[in-house]
Image (cartoon, rainbow, N blue to C red; front, side):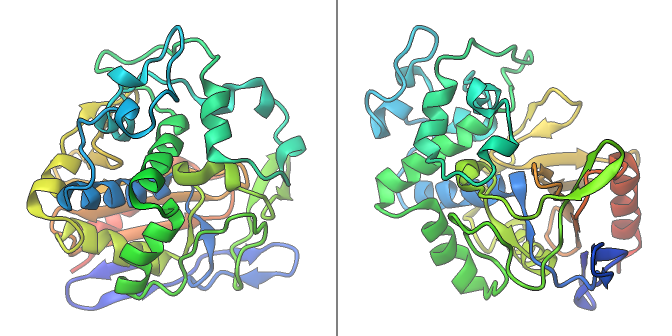
Length: 319
């Protein structure tokens, strides 16, 4: 866990164990999988490219990847980059493809993000919220392909070039086919028949731009604070990122970012994440980026409501 306050900067600490087998306690500097929190980093790359005039939010998939999306139900000529970032494209979830019915069978396999897009296309159209929202990892793997087409570099290389090096994020990297986490690691546990089973080692190449990034709580806090304070995006692009639509869970979703508002009216921003390895991410940052909380969790057996309440209380008390 990391907490940022205007007065004291960033503090990191741990609760419980980072490794149940060895009894190693969490200290707050462990590496973990960011899962869908990756999407905000990817969206920030895209919005920087928009600011540089290299990409258009309302440009179509067809413009950047001609002929890729052209089926009975899906047409890249009618899907924009903005819709991909906001999950309003209407594309289905590739993880619902028969290929992924047995997670363990795919655990060690290399899967190209392009293949995940192709896995999604035969699936029927999903049921979208009235706003058009349907959360689909396919959207972001497609965005990653567009970034590569525009820049000539992978999305991981762009994240490193634009954020990791400039912000000094020494604990952040794109794993590729590496199945192990860098040391010290936060082990990930999944509940199987009432027992917590270690699933840390996993080839997450298929997650691609939808969720492959590895980082630490301190690095995540630095990135998010820089983002919300306007250090990574020009005002026009940050404003676009914060334009939200109602999602299907009672919250609001912008361009790769979630808007939260508590009962007192306080607005924060973040992005949840959950990986098949058992790793979870919960974070919240104030509008000005001056106060932030990042929780990296190594087990799926956590009460999300209690975690969210704890984050809100910490942000309220930080000075």
